[in-house]
Length: 138
Image (tube, rainbow, N blue to C red):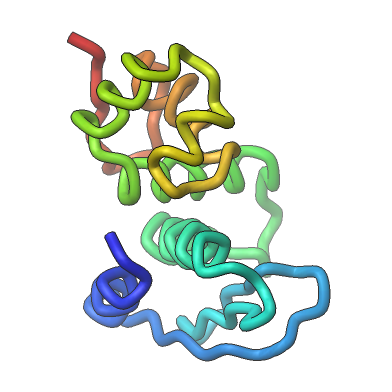
């Protein structure tokens, strides 16, 4: 999925995207549904960040209330991994590269973090965020 495809999918969810210099941060989600992406980051980072922020939006994570930050971040990563990594593409990449997350990430054009979450939470059948389907290796 290209960045343009992802932006179109975000718009369908009611999420709008703008770019600005965020320093070291890759992006942020505002309560209004606005995602700010750092234009100084690579397109790969922008794609993965937008998918992650779409996960926060879709899963209803609210930082104005007490919340489990670690859980929310992992759920948003699992959402992004499921959005950007197809089961077929993952299986082919794993067949080529073994279970090495860095090599698979390069092959699939996603971050290593999303591959690691895919491997532990999605592909291997661990718990997934509420409302999301679970993929199992066949």
